[in-house]
Length: 152
Image (cartoon, rainbow, N blue to C red; front, top):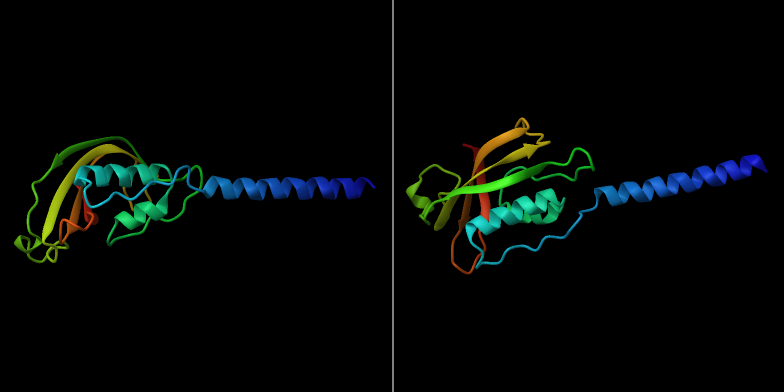
């Protein structure tokens, strides 16, 4: 009888732990994709919010190329805190930048940010960093997408 109670109790603990682990990996909030009218700065703010809220589907949908953000657990999830958009260039043509990742886009902008980066697996140490995001699209009816990024 004691073994039966112990096994039932252990099974309950495993079930609760498994359900809890599923919740930990779930996004806190679903972040809506920005529409075509959203400014490039708004697109970057939405991207960062999606990362911070662990909505990796939205974050990856904002990116056009590059490394996809993988699902992370509770403690090792990447984040960007204290986001400050420091500069947004005027729209320019990608063809003006030959041999670049943005060459094929008719509309390109660069958005420079500064923020506190935490838990990034791609070799970016934690702490305060400046990063530039290059967004592209071909018509005003399309939404801006992140084409490339780099540490500035």
